[in-house]
Length: 71
Image (tube, rainbow, N blue to C red; front, top):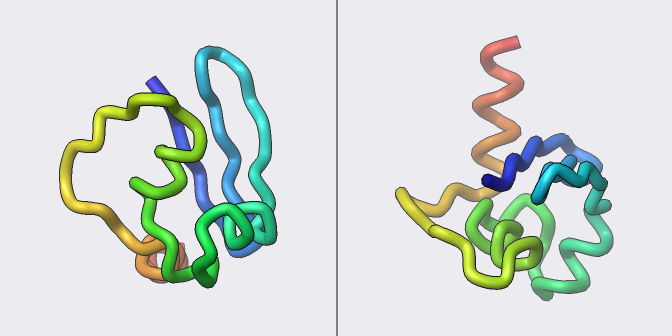
């Protein structure tokens, strides 16, 4: 199972018991899209070779907005 934790500067990832950080610029370069418009599914595809994409994709901008409204 892969765990993604988003913040305004990038994504903390736990993949196969390995923790690492994907910076905002890396994600934008890899996807060709502004960071806030990238979806969680797109990030998951960058991490996993064959991800299980269940549910609707969510924009990072929407995830961050929801996260900020609960704090």
